[in-house]
Image 1 (cartoon, rainbow, N blue to C red):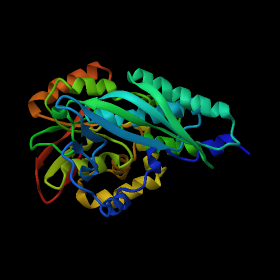
Image 2: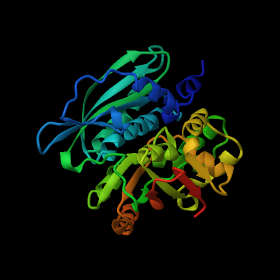
Image 3: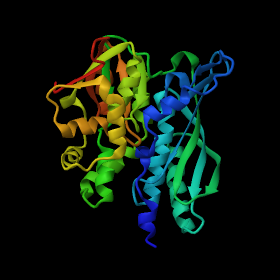
Length: 343
């Protein structure tokens, strides 16, 4: 049996259930009595839960795990950990502890598991957190991730739906990693494209979040499996609209070429089906549409910041090495929720 093929069948955030499916399930869950200390729960479809412990400290809780999207176990561990840790940064928090979540075939070489967990452990250490244990089960396929606990001041939480009219939208990483990983699985991705995608996916959002703390951030989320447009839809919260400038969106160049060759993901089509009705494209090529619907693994932060602070925040992000850009602005609620034009 070719273990390389078994190890990487296609994963990352492309493995997520579609947003529409999740909505139908979550809407039917019993809520229980209201808890005033639960500051952020699943009602807002935010990145993590936040629970107030004291007037000065709230706990941020999140978990994320998925199958491999690259062939190298060590690299996969780094990506999966960076992706899970990102939710804490998207809430404005700092990472404290992490627990491993592991599904692994008993017949597979345990050195592979060791490499996955080594990669994950290194990212937890880089985040300033402590790896405190975990849980594993025997499974037919490999899956790995983290349950992460962080802290944040209750008055300084970044929610995903607090944007205001006039806010500028800033994205801190390039799009296209889902398309590139798909192209790589069928032998069509260049080495340079894959290296750029891996470098992006293994970069912690810790550094972008540190820049954001000095500015007037109204809303924040990390762009993952539901795509840039899907997360923008959540950010608009049914009360706002936005204008997206497609030519300003940072993209890994090869992703556009691969999308033009129809190297697409099923997850992107689920994203299009769910979010497409809220989007109007004007003069946007098909390949760019696909990039905007592309599920990202360990994607960048999408930030709504006051117009007065946008230029200074962008300069700090770029100085820190982020390929960040102002990609649009929030507007009054209109007939179209997300308008996408070239510029």
